[in-house]
Length: 120
Image (cartoon, rainbow, N blue to C red):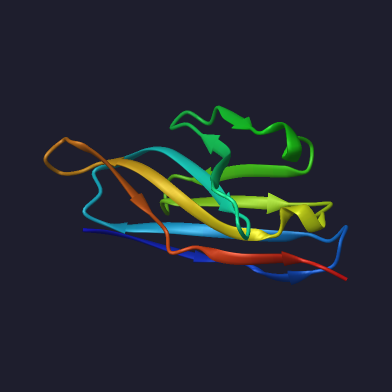
């Protein structure tokens, strides 16, 4: 089994910053891609950003220049630095990790989600 533990969410004023982290542990041979999704109230879950095993990143247009994804392979942790936050960034943020288990099969695991609220 693989567990993902997220932290760093909270309440912040518009223009503020937050840093989310997500650490994977368990039966992991190696980690491939790591992603952050978000789900706003009444909306579907959307992919926000992805970082590959080699560090290649991608972002949705609405967060480009404001959010930065990074990873620490030694600790199986992915980070999301969120700057210049806007009320429309309010959502539950989920990390998702694609990993190879000890049977050399690729699997995915989701974190439980962390609430980010941007409000004055």
